[in-house]
Length: 320
Length: 168
Image 1 (cartoon, rainbow over the protein chains, first blue to last red):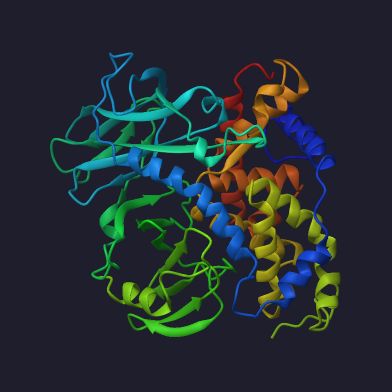
Image 2 (cartoon, helix red, strand yellow):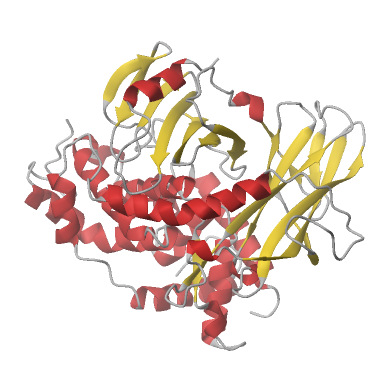
């Protein structure tokens, strides 16, 4: 395979691996999937996805609960300790890691950072990894945040079936940690103390809390992917016991051909909008340079969408 | 309505014509879904096919090839899947490979790829696993060729860093 870049050794390695991978991969028959695709009503997603998605979500829900617990952890770590008391027992240092996706919270001085643990740190039988961050230094022009990965005594969540002998997979695992600065971040830059890279930080206030939130939903805060520099997707998520809804914002891109939901519907905040029913249900609209989407997801197998179109519109129209 | 009437076009409005139109690109769609959306890749693939069917009248051969259009839809469905189900399993039976074996190297590669950002993963998969040239890769990713190159270059640097010196 030819390449435009200067690393023929890595090119060859990837090319060989790709050939091996392709040789072992067989696509499913087109006919069966096409029959499903063409039978469904145009604006709707396929109906059989609902029970499948519900089943997947049922499996994922316990993990989401665990993740939420970790995300809300605000314990300040000490790099000097190899073990540290915590709700999950002793923590053993794995090492410093490079964080990403920093989010400045509404108070202007608290920053949440993330790290993705991959399978090398998610071996069954070992404890769940934990991320802890701390402010290494603060100056008038920059803030340095260093993240450390720990191994906890808490086992990986068996409820997700990740460690089942019948499951060939282990997942990636996102954890986050928050640090609080002495003063508002302001215009200061944020640097990773391990990689020394400067990171953009997303201001959570850019995805505001809607004035209307259905009863029982809890605000999980804002997350984003700093690597998506083109669309800068960010979202605020809310959850209750049976599902969640998210408010997403991304930069509108007319060439991003599937950005639109394809079914025109009533305007949102005076802007042309589109609505998709399906098992998820989402309403999207363009406001200036941004495309906004309010999406609902229901856990479980009831098949009943908990937030109907009118509710999604009410949420969308109540954004400040 | 952009109902094309030349090579790469959908033909008429029938499922059979659509099937014929999709079929040459089906292995690439399936491979991309499999690469990007483990373990719910078949759901993503089904959703991408349904989306392509619903939006088939929007396909404009003047704006790009059928393959790139279908791959872009597949990539978008995988992105939506990931944002809905954040935990995404990565490697198959990673403990089963002996150090230094080809299998171990493949697993190291997969783990290195898994550490990339979603867009870097997309670039690597399009480039190496589907063999797309940079221009087509940029079309699928809805970005300029320069951005596609830099995304791929960043990905390669990170893969190399994650692999360490052992692979040399």
